[in-house]
View 1 (cartoon, rainbow, N blue to C red):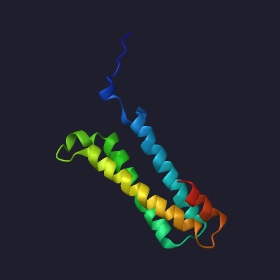
View 2 (cartoon, rainbow, N blue to C red; view 1 turned 90 degrees about the vertical axis):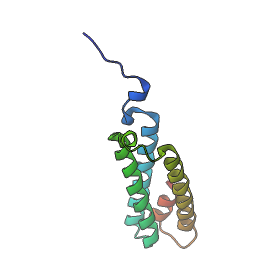
View 3 (spheres, rainbow, N blue to C red; view 1 turned 30 degrees about the horizontal axis):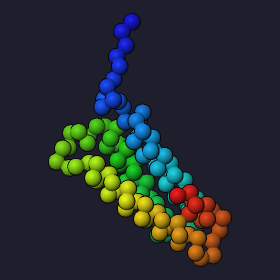
Length: 114
């Protein structure tokens, strides 16, 4: 029986380290957004985490469909790094703000999940 072994560059995105990290980031952001919704946190917390969920999902779909190789006019690694930095800054600000005022347990858990 003949088995086809894929080269590392042809490996599916879902099975790569980068794919696992992006999916883990998406799961943590969805968890935070869910906790903020349950706790009825202020709207900016929910909006920013919802935006981050949308962007992370966009990048995952983009890489799964291999559109990064099809659209070669954009330097995707740089765009990915910029996205990660912006996400980190937004989430750190939201996490700190979630801990400052009088909060419920779910808001604190949503802030800590980053």
